[in-house]
Image (cartoon, rainbow, N blue to C red; front, side, top):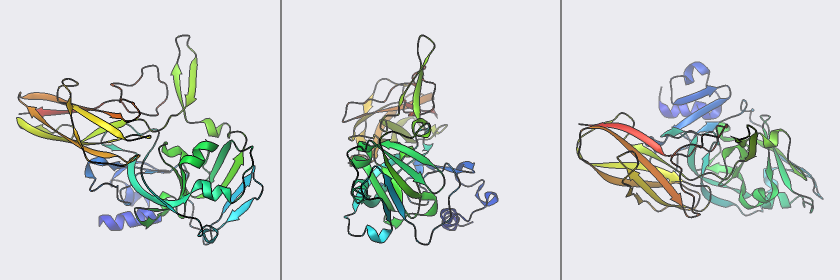
Amino acid sequence: MDRRYFMTLLSSGLLVPQVLRGEHHIISMAPLEMEFDLWSLQGQYTTVEDFYVRNHFAAPPRMETPTIKIEGEVEMPRDLAASDLTHLSQRKLGAVLECAGNRVGATGLVSNGAWVGWPLKDVLMLARPTGAAAHLHLFGRDGYKRSIPWERALADGILVTHLNSRPLTLQHGAPWRVVVAGWYGMDSVKWLERMVVATAPLLPEGGTYQQSRATPSGEVARQELPRVQVKSVIIDPQKGAVLRRGKVDVRGLAWTGEGRVESVEVSSNGSVPWQSAMLDPGADLEWVVWKARLELTQPGPVEFVARAKDSKGQVQPAERDQARLDGYTNNWYHRVSCVVV
């Protein structure tokens, strides 16, 4: 099947499971969950056809005249159509979107996109929120709901209509979705139909995504997930590659949820010595492409490792905290084993 035709069917929601299986990295069909091969990246942004998909429920059917309700702690509850927002200034923003449960590797639930839409703050102000506003509840037409702090919604939220200069496809939330730049994808609700300004978070749904850690006393400590953590991955060479002795180029991507990636270091000896990689210039919240040239002198197994540091001083950890009980914010060193001949 022609790949573009295949992805058109996928974006339209017309694919049947028998067609989809065996194509791309499908984790789940119902709901659809599809990874992006980072090593296939061409350019700065992930193409719409390749952009990862992480649905919680089945994608809802398209609506002829979609609207968004704003209610709760507001002076003027609103039921807004797209025509009610055209007087607002749109925002363009390049930003990585990553699932909180994304693993460490060159194939994953992460992509970099150029988003266009209205600042969520400007949309919410049309309903005149009261001083009691402390949380924003977001409801998608698929049944998914999420609660985020009010300050986060105002500072980082966008009501998105376009991805990479194209209208959103069905699987990416058409006709509009929320994107909360710098935070994990669970906050970026698709197919948005209702926003409730509230004094308290949704429970228990609003607090489902939490880091949990076993304490020395045997109890479980929980806390809210942080911003997207600093992370680097190696996209070339790939695991199991057979390499010749001499100079080899190691390439990868790195990103962070606040500020920008400041440095990436690479090793061909499992960790040390480290060598600084060259970074292509990148904007805040977007990923950067990096490259390092290493010398391979000995035949046999070799393990490439990469670690990143961002402008906020966050450093990628060597391994996962063994006391962690959850499966979120995975950002330890990416290791790729190859063979030198």
